[in-house]
Image (cartoon, rainbow, N blue to C red; front, side, top):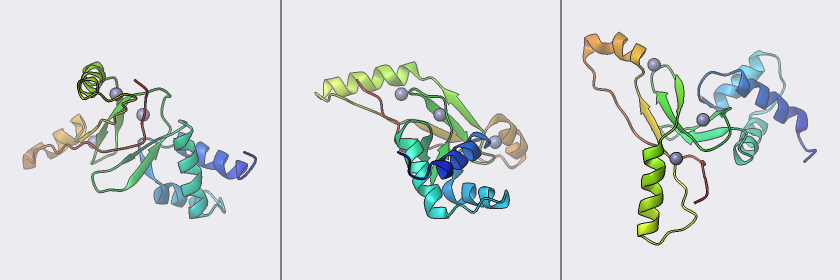
Length: 148
Ligand SMILES: [Zn+2]
Ligand SMILES: [Zn+2]
Ligand SMILES: [Zn+2]
């Protein structure tokens, strides 16, 4: 695992310094702006590595874009503001219990699930309340996995 070590460190550091989820392209732009010669393909690969090692979370936005974030380790869920990108890590005991139960009811083992909730945070809701736009939410898949 000697390969691309400094690039991976650079990507990890940039991700650590980012609030909320960010796309590979946006992270690449930020690295370039700070003077790094790192290539976009390398950023993609490094983010993929970090995600598969559990050092970063990855998920798909409702628009289908892959987004990444340096997250706490262990299984958890997210609330994500689709306007400002604010991300809150949430525990969801009901979801864990429900996922286990429905999997067992259908004879599934080693079940994993992904539940991320997109919406408008309180601040964005307040800012947009004048327009009375309904809050949007959706769930999206990512590579979260946890055992039974
Ligand atoms: Zn997370
Ligand atoms: Zn917001
Ligand atoms: Zn869960």
